[in-house]
Image 1 (cartoon, one colour):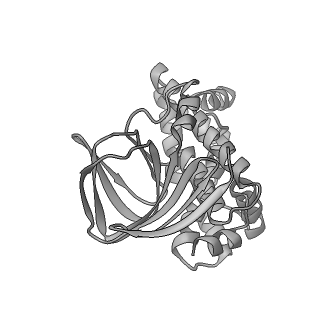
Image 2: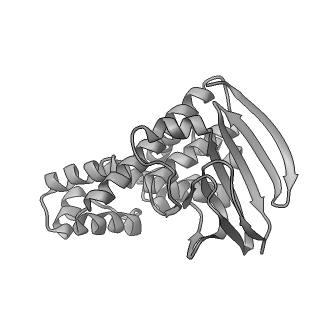
Image 3: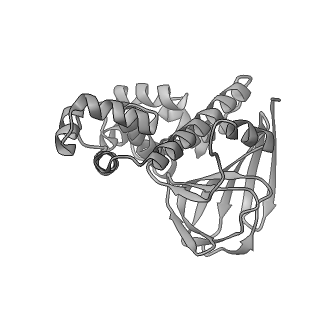
Length: 271
């Protein structure tokens, strides 16, 4: 679906960097402090990853307060307004072409309702897309396609799980991982807290979220580390330990496997 193109422009939201890779528009918007945008619409559906700062999206009577690592889903032609925090914000916007959206929708619900995702695997995948957009090469079109389809699969599985009603205990397990990802967690301990067998937990978690417990935990740690890499000059070893990794080498290996680049390369590409 094509290669990639790049350009820069200035809008009311400040400097905007845009690339089109494989018919997917990828842009970084730096939003000034206190910016308020009256109700407006986007021609195409989009996913918005908050990189730095905070902002609020108001859709009808609903308001989404988003912070770094969160992803806002906005369907095409959805009226909404924006308010940026006093500290400003930087966001990464993913806008698939209509053909992409329709292709994924053949398999299930995708970008059909506004929503805020917090601590979700889609945040990690969006961060991977961000890293890829900052250092495109000949393989980038294929990589972007794969990541977008994986995002679609994650959202479809999430909606399917919600429609059947996930067990309350499973939601508690996921919340425990979100709250304590930097701590030492084991499948046995999580299952004991939930009051289920560890095999049942492992199977149900994957059926509902599309990833294993270990993959989800690793993703939350990488997500936290990526935030730190974008927003601070903290040493890699300290970032690794703060995110729950036992060593810098372990962190670097996991980061590269998930993000496609080393922590150092990621920091250089986003700074």
